[in-house]
Length: 142
Image (cartoon, rainbow, N blue to C red; front, side):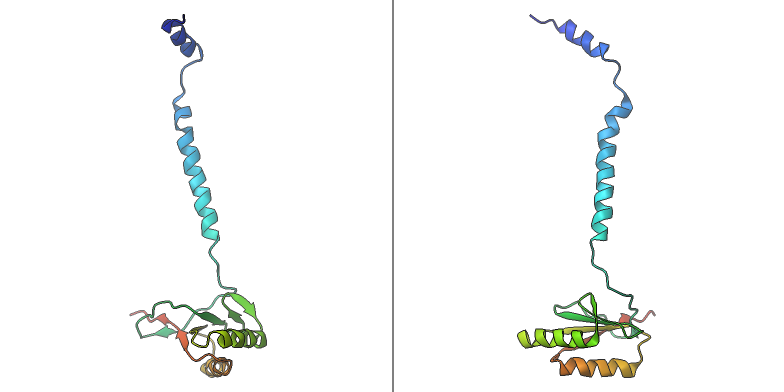
């Protein structure tokens, strides 16, 4: 037969419970959540190079499905987040357009790209089969 008094004396013999030890699991959980969100924040895909679109007075259009072409100021090009040469971009786009002719295409060009280069690229994209090209611009600040 075990006495209750004996169990109590064993608990006291182990020493007083440290208040810091009680909050350690909470600190561990908060730290793990912090690490999780830091890692999860890095998983978002970023563009291969920075593009600052021109300003537009029109209302912003909602994002649509389809492909996106980035056009950098130095003539750099990317298709759906992959930097590529112009010939490869047009060939890949022509393949996609042959498979899905109604696929919309978004063109996001840097504000420093000359308008003549932008129009020439839009013509080349049309010749690759893109019928629906949307030029992405940032809203003009009032």
